[in-house]
Amino acid sequence: MDSKDQSDRGFFSTLVARHGNGGRRGSVAASIAWADAQRRAMVERQLRRRGIRDERVLEAMEKVPRHEFVLPEFISKSYEDHPLPIGGGQTISQPYMVAAMAEALALSGTERVLEVGTGSGYEAAVLARLAAHVYTIECDPALARSAQERLSRMGLANVVDVIEGDGSVGYRPQAPYDGIVVAAAAPDVPARLFEQLVEGGRLVIPVGERDCQELRLIRKIGGSPVVSKLGYCRFVPLLGAHGWEEI
Image (cartoon, rainbow, N blue to C red):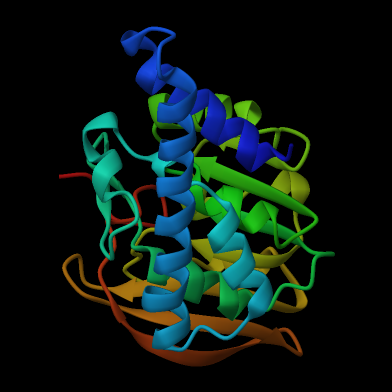
């Protein structure tokens, strides 16, 4: 049984425990089947049909149980095509946006990746299936703790390190990184993040105003940034020394 199966069974066993032993196995099995079917439909309709082509990304998105990363009241909506609140004024990103950002990193499985903005840990869990190691940094202590617990429960503690801190300055102790992905909107590209890329590395980040941003792919070529524009998006603001001030 892989970590996804363990996660699904543990989650749904808790969900139906109040019904007692009678019919429990059937309820758990039906719930797991529901989640599996929802993920397959999400990948086909929201990702593949909208242009996501990296098969490794599509497989990762089909394997990671998004329902594990949302608040209980939103479980029924966990595979829908939009962000969802996770507490602390933060959100879990739209599935398509997670896939598009992961695809832009062009990971082969050998890379070391930094994620800025852990949130509930969903994107880190996806990246853990695509890279050799993921360092993810979160400024909200409660979110960082819950994400660490969740990712450990899913068997990813040896692949993902959760750090509590200011992600706008990156995480120098483990730099440089092959890829950096920022799951919050910055007013400009933080120089500290670009500096922490390896030569040839990729930074994916939403840049713009608080209510509308442009998703950018920035490659480090000859020590200089080469920028590609990936489309418009809307993320929660990046907070910290090189982000937005809290209001």
